[in-house]
Image 1 (tube, rainbow, N blue to C red):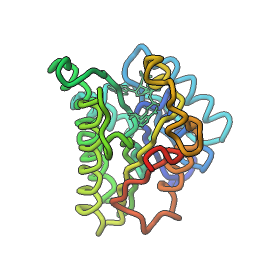
Image 2: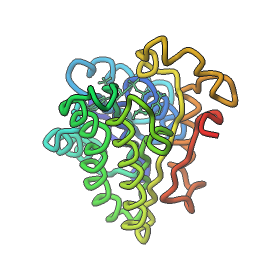
Image 3: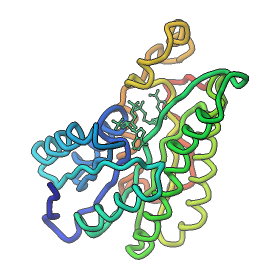
Length: 255
Ligand code: NAP
């Protein structure tokens, strides 16, 4: 159920893939910081959970919060999502492109479908949402676009050609947005998490998980909430002079 913003000036944040994992933690941190939040999920199946989460945010933090199902790799669905944001809040200040999937496999065995799907969900989605968001933010002369990349997009990873390419693409997209819209006080930054405890990493085979902590300077996986604090900072006025950056948050994994 859409909420009416309680002030004309309350900033509005849209977080894609926000019903669980890192996106959920980001939406929570932004609600805590006073943003009205739109919780996006991938489809009707996850909408009840997204709706319940939005209601929980509204109740806990006293901010307007609403949920909208949309497969962000689909241009028509993104149009629907932005129509929802416009109808519900009439503005958009922060876009967090967080939705992402993996379909891992060695390059030699990777199907074209697995390559295309990961690029569509992880990269094309951010193109579709950012061009809609930038239009709104340009008029408002303020905006924050925060893209969830990965350390894998910087250093590559065996078995993740599609995923690494999508995350490297996100980095190029982020830097370009930063250059194109900087004059309008719109910043764009990429967050590059290492190994964070979510459903995505819980799916990894035992073989990959074994010895992972040894490769991390801090000797543990990260928490979604730790990534969320970086996103909340980038969304704030405190980060006004940071743009076009790729900020690693990986416990020293990439050292
Ligand atoms: P997760 O727990 O698997 O959650 C993925 C989220 O993406 C879910 O909310 C899911 O929505 C959403 N999603 C998937 N396909 C979508 C689509 N087509 N349209 C809209 N939403 C979609 O993953 P996570 O670990 O939180 O990852 C979040 C982001 O961080 C991803 O971009 C991931 O690549 C990145 N990242 C994660 C790690 C890590 O170690 N976990 C490291 C580096 C980067 P539903 O609930 O509807 O399925």
